[in-house]
Amino acid sequence: MTLLHAHDYGGDGPQLVLLHGYGRSLTDWDAAAALLTAGHRVLAVDLPGHGDSPRISPWTIPAVVRHIADTLDAHGVPEAVVVGHSLGGLVAVEYARANPDRARAAVNLDGFWWGREYPGADRVSEMLLASAGTIAPPEYIEQQVTHSTRFGIPADRAEAAARAAARPLPDGTWQTQPDRAAALEIVDELHRLGALGVTTWLDGVDRPLLLVQAGRRLPPAPGTEWFGEFNARFAQGVSDELAALARTRPTITVNRINATHPMILETPETVAVLVAGFVRGLPD
Image (cartoon, rainbow, N blue to C red; front, side, top):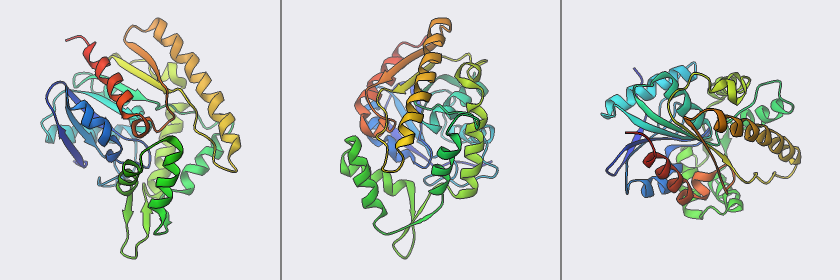
């Protein structure tokens, strides 16, 4: 049994479990969690190889789901609405699939992916893997804060999140997470699920789902202008599938947030309102 690092934000009401994205940590949820505790009991979990959780090998979605279940048992959480951002959103859906008796519902905040054959997928994979487990200079945190201001994320929130997502080393440098071996396995899992397409991927998940897309695209970094076209094309395809699912699957709710991908850092108030409203509408 592998227990993952978790943080209990407290609160009273329906239980929420919060999961973060690739290369991030549960600290990304601090601002939204503080708002959600007004009407919910809130627990956040670091995914394996992220934050303060131990690494696992191989890093597979079924293994991660089992470790989350064990961690929730250790915290006395028999049932919850599982809310995930990005990679955490895919994991939240898979948790609901594997544990229909424990997942009251799942929320996926912009956690969608593509198969290996999708045009440009290899270039995105290279970008992810290039930063995995690298040794970053002492000014790495400052660089991350500067980057985050492009999305309107407050500096103090960006700094806390950046520090929690990397490992400080004795010489003042930083090691990014996850390490490369885990990153390779994570990307394999993402491509495996993405190759199915959203509609096929969600077959067999009978728990209520809230599926949320970012309403604005990430501004491309210099030299990666191609990513803007890639992202817009993929987002439109996902949007079309989600619209069809919302019409034909009564357990699926679709929404869009006026934010870019890092929405839980950029607009935690909007995220909290959306999640709270979804939970209020769930059947008893």
